[in-house]
Length: 203
Image 1 (cartoon, rainbow, N blue to C red):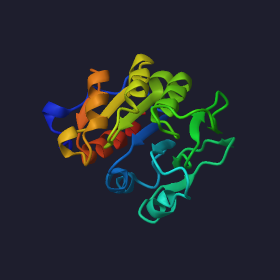
Image 2: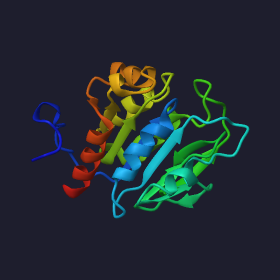
Image 3: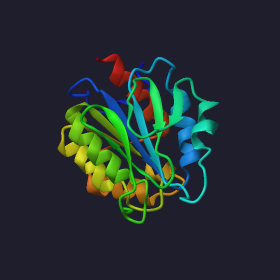
Image 4: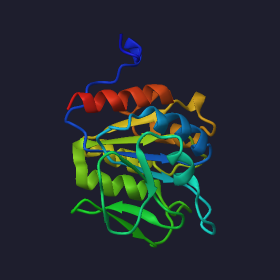
């Protein structure tokens, strides 16, 4: 039996997905520590992740999650080519963008909603490149960054998933995303993990 309840079963993915973008803030470490280790080592898509982090110190997020995950996990280096089966994290104090040639670029442009890296910046650039082949995921957080970006994902024909606000450590970000994007599906983190795995098996 499908792990998702029938009532919560998202509609099928319209086109085979080519990438996943994830945004999170307050409570991100706990949420990502459930979601990312649930993805198998042969998960075939790049997973691009923005977490709001202090700009004045080195992030240990990638190294901490690498020890828990089956997928390769690393912090992005400017202009590196995007590879399938890898979880990428934006480094502190840099926006992360997807380029037309599928390279990942870092930008020191002004913060968006007081955030650099910005979830909106990543999601909007990825939506421009992948269109309907993109899955956007908004997790726990205490501001509304990501709402505009998730709307860009669905406007381009992609799929929007949001952590259930009542299960998030900080509800503001998932609530704002659901208000901005009425076609988004609200799921628990285990259900999001199942959705992502089933989406790639339908390729």
